[in-house]
Length: 263
Image 1 (cartoon, rainbow, N blue to C red):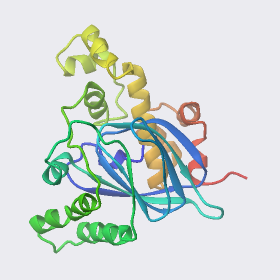
Image 2 (tube, one colour; image 1 turned 30 degrees about the horizontal axis):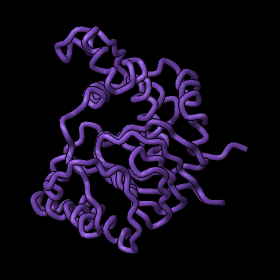
Image 3 (cartoon, rainbow, N blue to C red; image 1 turned 90 degrees about the vertical axis):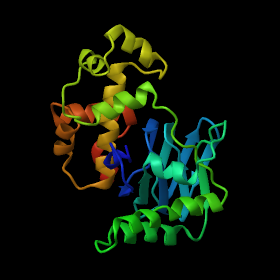
Image 4 (tube, rainbow, N blue to C red; image 1 turned 180 degrees about the vertical axis):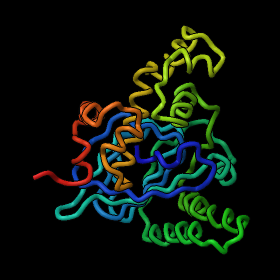
């Protein structure tokens, strides 16, 4: 998904997102806290807690860790959907939002004419090679302080759930031919125990593996110029056609349509 560059994330990371065709993506999983700064077009999100939300240009949509949502990116006539995603690691969230609340907050939208300035601060900080690391880390907390000042609350990551743990393992090498027995052995449990373990997430191992690979592919399509054939192999598919067929079955759109409108 849009968040693939942040896998195994211990630092703030940024990715530019572009999409040529309107498409709806179901059951996307966000392992980390993500802020999406929308520049062109709009994003529609179906949140299990807050219902339907719409973010437009200059808005920021905030996804807390562990979110599973359905979303739609909408380009505008004559221009691709464009946004910048900023991923924050769990310890930074806990630094600013240490006062835990009993109920999850869900997806939130912030409308602010300061969003561009905040994003510029993040990008300038990350791109400054002369900036000492302690100062860099301090400045990167500013967007979170800004969110809190504007009434946004983020829940620090609770104990990792089985879905998150298995996805994080798969993401260490998406091209590896993962098998349920191997994954169960990694967590020092039996396959039967793992099946019961994953029942809590509502997904079996095969579906988790497929979704993790396809969401990584979606992110690469949106944020890089890597050829689709290379993305297919990077995501663990044996052929580009297998990736394309699986992608269309999952998302209802061809991989090529993410980058350009076919004539």
